[in-house]
Amino acid sequence: MPTVRAERLAEICQALFVAAGTPVAEAETVVRHCIAANLAGHDSHGVIQVPTYIERIKVGHIVPGAPWKIVQETPTTTVVDGHWGFGYVANERAMKLTIEKAKTSMVAAATVFRQGHIGRLASYTLMAAEAGMIGLITADSGRSPKAVAPFGGREARLGTNPISIAVPSDLDGPLYVDMATSAVAAGKIALAMARKAPVPLGWIIDSEGRETTDPAQHRQGGALLPLGGTEGYKGTGLAMMVEVLCGLLTGLGFGVEPSGRHNDGCFMAVFKVDAFRPLADFKREVGEFARYIKATPLAEGFSEIYYPGELEHRRERDRRANGIEVEDATWNKLRALAEGYGIADKLGF
Image 1 (cartoon, one colour):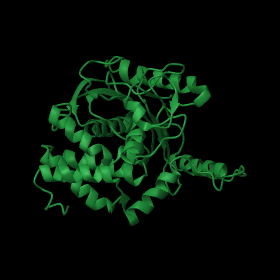
Image 2 (cartoon, helix red, strand yellow):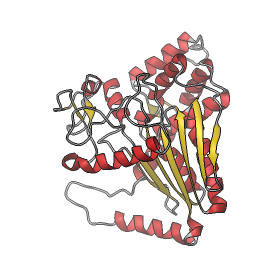
Image 3 (cartoon, one colour):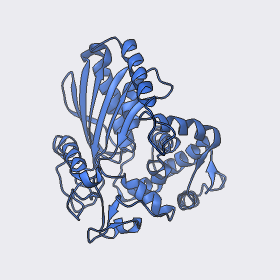
């Protein structure tokens, strides 16, 4: 696998999106979010997604330069129609507006529908944390093809339906959670396939409902399992609540429509910390809480306890300094796209 500096990887991916008809500013936004996922160690949401997004542009499932329209609004709420634009673009703009509303209203929320894949949810909640606010976001895939079987089932009826919450603190790195309500994000199955690696038991089942370590079974009638293992009803419950907020509250609905068009629905909320207590005091106490948790005596087999977001912070520092490993399958796809657009030599492939 080649190891590529983040700046070079961004240059390559931006050029490919522009060649595919994406406005420069939108290409920069999409790539910034993808590279941030790679830097944090979540390669499943990084540049491995770029060939998929470009294919969606080609078939009309993503519309570069699509309008962004507020269809309903109050001083504290917003409903946004993304008109099938890039989810990164539509969602980032919606979060910026929600943060601005919370600055005066103390609490604000928004829903976004008819947009492409929005990637790693922490990208948006961290925007709120950096503004001295608590950010919350949930997402589902509308009536796109599903990936997760409900607890006790063997057919996919739910999305991976992730949840993220980020809070401001005085820690070196941000404290946040960003997790699928399935045992694992679907992108990690795709990553395992690209790397020709097995997956752990407990991640997926085959078409007969049997647990398997073969990631290819996911695309052969299998399904992801819900979060929770033997208590998977907890993951199923969380996933259903996310679908209510992001599918039903947005009007996207549930189930699967025949077109197969990916359609992320999103619910986000922002809470201004100063509305509840002084921000500096809150940030200090969040840091103290995290350090208190880290100081817990260790169980056998463990060398350290991490606060949520700490590992990602460490990975980012390492990968900014030493580069990002890109699996051969993804690198070859990026090269093939560059050759197809006639820009391979320009990009140094």
